[in-house]
Length: 450
Image: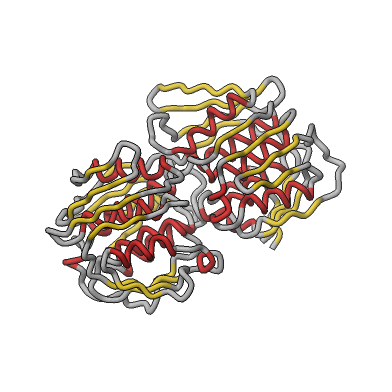
């Protein structure tokens, strides 16, 4: 699918969809818990649906409730009815699992979060569970996580360290060292280890940890469950006893700061004024740092609270370049690269080598795609140097073609770029935006070409 997007102002009020990271964590915990959980206003996206499918295959009973509800932003197309709640009857944990999955392989689609987190959970079962996914997933390495699971006694079968991969318990525990270029490896072990049999102790050394805020989110989930564990202050070591059980959880899923970055950037680039609803500044999501970056680039960012929080983003003066460390927030690299293309001077995105191991090599991809727009970009091992050259609007410019590479964050970043002087643009692979933000292209008045 291709999306055609032209220059335009971007202002108004919108509610941000639920956090993908929170949604998938809550769904997996509910699926492994005893009893019934009510997860309100979850993310309704392709990644979330992949996780639902995997949890059902692992024994959870998940029922969707849809209705007209203004709190659900930009839902996936479901006949106009919006997802307002999942009712999840959990399995009660590995010991209570009713039987083997009926599928030969559990397909996670494009969801790396589902793959890594569910992979570790499945390693608690006493029978083999196989995972696969789309072409991108089959190129994303799980090797460090698989090595750690093998060190904990789990049988692992993978030809390349990528999916398809099969795991089989029991989880015997022990001490392993796990380098985490992506935080999802560590979150996977932290969520699974408490459910190992009583008397089993899991100790994890972490010599490298990127994306620390996502691990802090996982720890917040475990604390809310009352899970006993020891953690070094710098998160370099964990000791987790087995024998715990997850309890049902209820309540709404917080809004997604990662998704909010794209409409906020659209307002900043076009000089609009945007009011964003559904975010909480006290949430541990790391990508809320984007709004501090906006301030540094010359934008105005204002939090207000009445019945709920709202966030206003606007800009009066020019955007300014700067140096931004993205180690904790590599998912921001595509949108920050576009921001840099519209900023005065030079923008350096640094300490983000792990952005190369996402759905695509986002450093190389953004350098190439912005280069097609005439933006001078220097690709470095751990980031980008962008010389801002895009200005104003260009309604009479001929359409230029870019590739979203099937990467949802690349597609959305390039779509934002089209709103200013870069447009009009035709972006291929645009359907992948629905992985995390269904309806985003509609927000930008995109024309969809089959």
